[in-house]
Image (cartoon, rainbow, N blue to C red; front, side):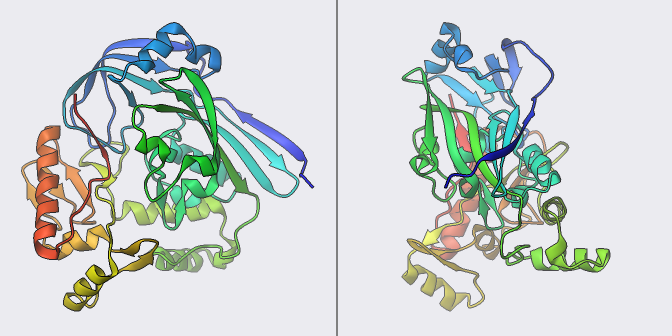
Length: 368
């Protein structure tokens, strides 16, 4: 029998602003802090159907030259300037509480993912806490199916509402229709077609059976330290406390994406999935190689491959491989997007020369 709702909660986004705004010569945010500007930027503070269907909005978005910008956490601007862009700033959300303990969220695309994690974990809701400290917006999260520490946004997604830029209409895709896979989705595989407006998520008022998850490197130790410090059993940890543990672990190996130097885009390369015979060959040479059986082959950590190629901490001018985590490439200020990508190519070449495995860049590279 279908459960009944036992309560609803709505949280407004930013202070009241015009439905839409036009900005000339606008800076485009990006966590790599590469130079990037748009000749003209459309800012959508509202994503209601009436707003999206305005001729000036629908026409702007239908132009394939219009670049959709988000928080800039998964993008490399190979060019410092593009002509046209659009960004969603609408950031309201609502929650329906079911009598089964399920919480169903509807979140506008402009809300920061980390802000949503903090807001929901702070209310004692389980499901997103492992995604703490991941930059970017809620709208960008399904695009690349962001994930960390065993959780992907796909795990919690109920539906994704989009604007069809070609058909000029709103559509809603159920989770299975989103075609989620590792760091990808139908939205990423059909670039320029979909603008994500809202995301429906399902959380829980009760913890999962394996609470708290500690199987990933560093998490068990961090949770153990928390337990010793607080005098409480790990199973008594709240989702907000787990999110803080995740934050501590991530900040120990990743630059702070909120500001300052160096800039980074987080994990810069996909963890490659290789054929079993390739994994066997690599394991013979490096018996301690970490690897994980996954559908389609064996996943090998890209960070391990980069470190094995002797590149951890390698720096050329303003660009470097992080000395804290080899999967992170850093921008220390002054490099162009083209220079940054040349360094990434050097890293990929060296890894292939040493191991025979070619790394694939994870962030989107923007050219005009």
